[in-house]
Length: 115
Image (cartoon, rainbow, N blue to C red):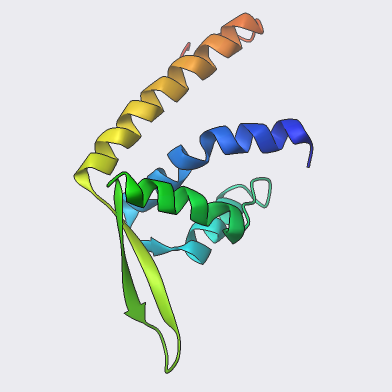
């Protein structure tokens, strides 16, 4: 993957993680798998790249983590989006859509929201 794609992914990862958590509580592997599944493998994220984002969101109070026993020796940490996280998601989604719409206009591709 090119460096440009990696940079774009880093800029949108927080938004996409929060989006996934809007639907249900998930643990790390489920989030990375959802990215791959929804994009037919075009958007992948290693769990090692995901966890710093989850920790940042948790430290900010946007999500909370809780553990669930899965089997005899395994414990999974699930993440739940809080109301503040839902508000943060809406804010960054609005910003993202404004910026991408502007980029499309600059590139003479029309706006994303133009019919």
